[in-house]
Image (cartoon, rainbow, N blue to C red; front, side):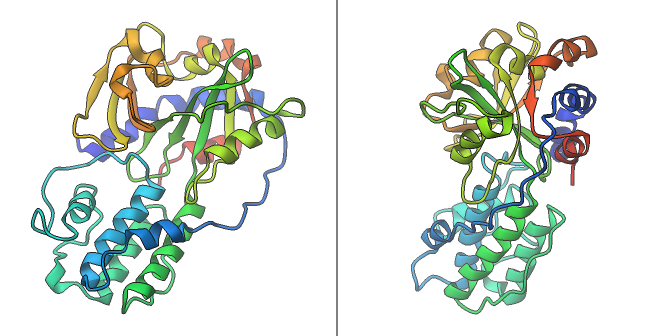
Length: 320
């Protein structure tokens, strides 16, 4: 089966369960208007190569950085070196993009021009059913502006659903993200910041807001959430003792993936307590094993908190 299709199927069986569980638990608040889009200008400027580098090298370096900002721990979808010779300037970025089908067919440094740059950004935005804004190109400065505007459009199109667990002291014990509106649907597990906790008092949305804000980045804003105590939250994803985890990619990246974490270590992996995950901030995973049954869904109804209703849940579980 083609890798992208296989990844899309990882969450298909969760749809009915989430609709049942989360619709019953929604707090009924109105959706907040999005904050102004942050476009990661500092990060994009840092990605620029030396001024004497060609626009082709600047293009792959900028696009690769855009992708890592909007698509953290993005698994490779194929192998191959890419169109820039290993060791040359821009080779690593071109290889990263090639392995994720993010370079136009036939692209090469020698044929790169402003039209190729437009295609690169347009194809990236199109993966999220968005349209890239008008391009400037021409030089490195113009390309940074193009990248920032396109990343803003992509950022506004993302649909991350944060699912996190809390311990008896209301501290976050694990933080997962259902990441379906993407070329590679997957579950992200993010190491929570030390001391991260719900705010005392208020409704569920008010209590969760500081957690979501602290875990957000310049390109990814967490606004939609589901949270519960750890035992309940784990049951959304795994049947303890029966479900194994397959690590597909990580941040920082490693060459050791995929790696299967057996059932007896899955809970530790969610908390980043497994030795195989030392030094990592985020992993992309699939959970493999028995699917969650309706009985399990019903058993957690009263313990789940969310700011989404049925329409919101379906929107976050959809694929582009």
